[in-house]
Each structure stands twice: as C-alpha cells, then as structure tokens.
Length: 96
Figure 1 (tube, one colour):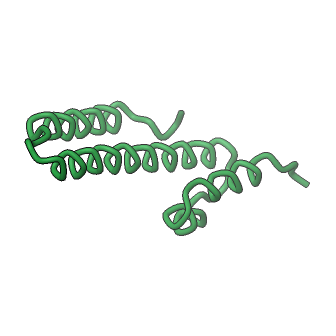
Figure 2 (tube, rainbow, N blue to C red):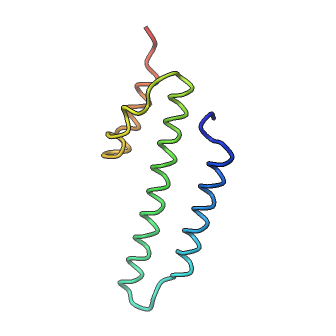
Figure 3 (cartoon, rainbow, N blue to C red):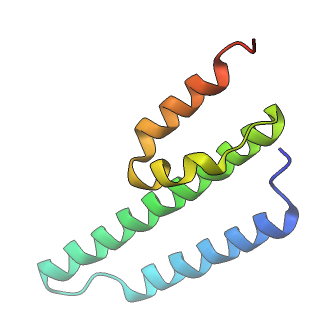
C-alpha cells in the first residue's frame, strides 16, 4: 500500500499502546457506573481507530486507481458504513 509508511505505522502503534496503557491503568472502579464509562470509552476508542483505518484504506485504494478520495471525506465522517459501501461500488464500476 502506498499510504503506509513506517513512520505512520509506528506512530499509530505507539498511540494505540499509550491509549491502551491509559485504559488499563485507569481500570474499572468499584462503582457500576464507572465500569459503564470505562467500557464506553473502550468501544469509542476502537470505533475511532476503525474509522481512521478505513479512511486510510480508502486513500490507498484511490491512489492505486487514480481517483480523488477527498470528496468522500464529509459523507464518510457523517455515515462511515454506507459511504464505504458506496465508495467500493464506485471503485468497481467499469471505466468508460
């Protein structure tokens, strides 16, 4: 993939390691409500990571095919899954 450089990969892995370290050091408290916020934070962190990873994949696919991906950024931020499906369909259509 053209987009992935070693600096980007190591930076993202370091950021993930720091965030997961914070997550485990914070740990769930004794109250049930704290466990809910802790779990919600973890789910949100994973979702954000997935969205970033998907958009980087979209950039890579656009670079490979010579398309413009930045037109897809706003719809992707508003509704990632439907935009991703439409983007894949857009990339699969035959060139005229």
